[in-house]
Image (cartoon, rainbow, N blue to C red; front, side, top):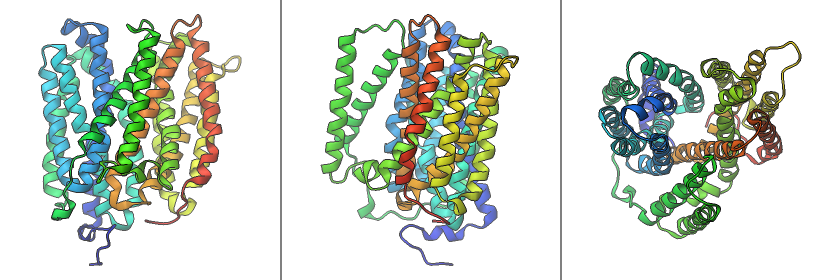
Length: 469
């Protein structure tokens, strides 16, 4: 048995390769459950609106509230996982998510459902930070490849979520989009209790003091930002420009106060070093641009196909299958090659390919070529780009401070969410009132392509690394 270092717990040496595969499958199943839930509920909005006798706006809050709770809890759950133990937080997240899913399926009014969705988000937000921490702690020299493979899980969830959602709503009921999580969650909890190694004992000096002021400032910042994003994306928003400007001002001021607070608090619940410190700041920007903004733009492709080419929802939805498959394949290949290529090469190549893919989406198909075939090809190119970027962007931050892997994973997911929210809200705001929504959205994709190209110089500042870490 090798000696432990501060970055590599002794428990990591206790896992055999077979045990590591089993643990990886357990945490991956939880991540898949969470990623499916992020897309499956959207397919049930109309059905739950009718069954609960509510408005479209209230039905939409079942998604908005989940997004808010998820974004807010990501850094908190990462911090909790680093301090109290990955296994404890992982199990607590699985149990919370599973119980909340059951309760969501039993809800009989929209207010209860919205509140339960916030609780469900609190559980789901703990999956990525704690799962990443478990892998980093217990996989030894294989941890860089294992966390790189996490990038293959989310495209699978994004692909199968709408499919299962459509099947449940068509042949069963909207409540089953929540009930399906219950047996999966129970299986994950039982397997985690049996096979994931216990957390090492926590000394008194490691106990976490909750930074309530920091949490409150972050909550105000995120909630104000999400309200602005929500109203920008609504054609007939119930607020005027003055109130919208006020909300934006609140978000800006509270965000500045949050950064000022964490720089002075002792201890802050998010270390300023992980937000904008050497190496971390540029990695977070890269994750926001090539992760969050790319994901948000890809999610709008079915809407674009409908607006510009008149495709029906099911036909347009199949476009994302090509993107997902390409992303999975390239994520695996990029993960296997990462120790030789380092981080910058796949980021440069993947970022450039993603920009080309966005431009192809914006352009009209050549004469004689069907729009579906053209967009399928463009989506496949986008999948190649995101697949190449994901393992490098994930490992670039983690190798800087493996002992804080959960917090770093939470911040990465937060950057993804913020980038996605930004591009979706701005794109839908641009479409509001457009005479030709399809062409307007094509210009949005051209603008995203330009942004991806302009952001490529950031890659030169990403800390380079070859080999295991």
